[in-house]
Every structure is written in structure tokens, then in C-alpha cells.
Image 1 (spheres, rainbow, N blue to C red):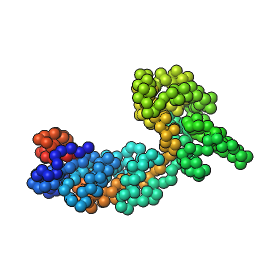
Image 2: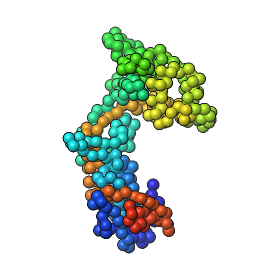
Image 3: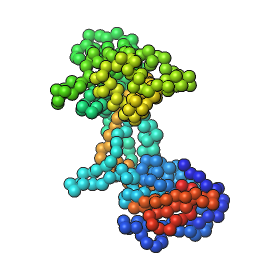
Image 4: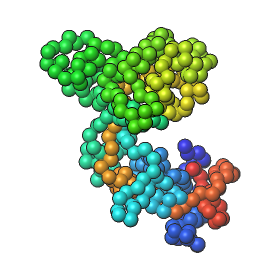
Length: 352
């Protein structure tokens, strides 16, 4: 978000040469010298920060009426604190999840606009997502959308198709034949490859019988309307844990399948998630976004493959990218903001 007065107001600019560099050698001061530019500071060198700088600098190329500085606490800045480093044996080490799922359309669009980045060269092919619970591997989700497209069915699959003998030549093909005659989301458990191995005899693993207990959710699934305020108000009154209990979900299915999905989608346990939020997530990912769990992985370091050329592109447009610049405080003041880096004196800016 940006805020502040219009660019017509005379405001101080940001100069690069000033006193006392940080311990990392990065400039940590923002100077005050009058000119016509609107001063914008972006805090954080991750996807959000770089995307904002991309948007502002793209619209600022011709008029040059906005001065943009990106500040990040990490020394290298690119990729933010998740940008990581290279180990002693030269392997990239990066924090966070670095998969690119099929629904990350904005991310793919941004990557296409980075000079020197070709998405198919930087990312691998779509591959299955693997679901893990606290007991280990549970299931492998199939790469759905590519199968549908190969059969000329787009996102709707082959529902209602009569299988031929060639469709029944293996367990996998039998699964696909059965799934093609089931509506989403009933096809997903059939297509998923369940892991039945147990490292510990006491571990709980999902069986086909456990999966069948999920049928108890179909009533609520059919009743819940994604775009209906009344539906949301109705199911918001109870936690998802109570919904699953009423539906008769088997303990194994809950522990191994439902609970991990809740931690991935709404990112909270069932007792802390409303039934409406849970149903909405399952509805979107199973019905509206078929193939949403198909994922692509970077063919190396994201910081080096994506953010490094991206930073070069931004700097060519005049964006000042500064690593080693930890923001210690931000204060709204006199129609603008005062930002302080470390122990240095605060500097005035127009938008942050």
C-alpha cells in the first residue's frame, strides 16, 4: 500500500551518499534535499516488495516523477530474508516453500515480464503434490489438469465416459476409468495414490474404507453455497471439527488427510477453523480449481534464477535496492512518514 500527498508537492529527495554506513556496508541513511519527486520507500525485498517496485517503476519510466527505494534487512536484498545463501559446498539454502502451483497466475505473469527469465527454463514441469501428515507420507495427488487437456476435456475431465478394455489394462488405468465417471471431488480420492507403508506399526494409515467415510460430508458439501451469505452465516456458527464429527469422518481419514489439508489451505486446525471456511477451501480447490495442487519447482536458487535478474531490471529503471537496511520504526507525521533505519536519525518520506 502507498499513501501520502500528491507528487506536485515539493518534498525532500533521497540521496545515496551520506554518513555512517551499516555494518554490512549498505547505506542506511535517507537524505533531505528539495526537489519535485515523490519519495516512496518499499520495505521488504520479497515477492510483494519487488512486485510493487515493478508496478511503480513500470509506470514511472517516462516521467521519472517518483523516487523508489527498496529496503531489506538481508544483506543481499533479493528474495528478502527468504533469499538464503550458499552453503560451504556451494548448494543454495533458502527458507520457506518454493513451489509454484498452477493457480499462481500472477506470479507466472510477473516472471514473464522479467528480462532474462524464461519460465520454462527456470521452472520444471508440473509434478504431483505429496501430502504428508505427522506420521509421514499419506498420498500423492495426481497431475490432473494435464490429463484432462490431453483428453480434450479442459477442466471438466471425462465425466460419464464409458471405459474400454484398453482403459482397464492396469490399476492406474482402472482408477482413472472409475474416476472419470465420478463428479469432483469424489474422483480425487480414487485418483490419489495412497501410501500404505508403515515405518512404525502404531502409525495410522488411510485405507479405502476410511476414505469412504468422507461420503458423510456430501450433505454439507451440497448444502453449502460458496457465494451465499446465508450459507456462510449458517456454517460459520460451528467449528470444522464439529462438522467432521457429525459427518462421521473416520479418525484415520481426519488425522492423515483432512487435518493436513486444513493446515495447507486455511492454515489452521479444525477446532480453530469455521465449517464455512473449511467447506469453502475444499470447494475451491476440488471444484473450481481442478489441478490446483499441480506444482512446478525452480531448477535452482529462486534468489539467483528469478530475483537477481529482476533486481537488475528494477535498477535499470532507477529503483534503489538496498540490502542490510533494517527498518526499526515507521511514524506517520505531517502528511507523510518518518522512517528510521537502525539507530540512525529518522528521515521523512511521502509514501511507504
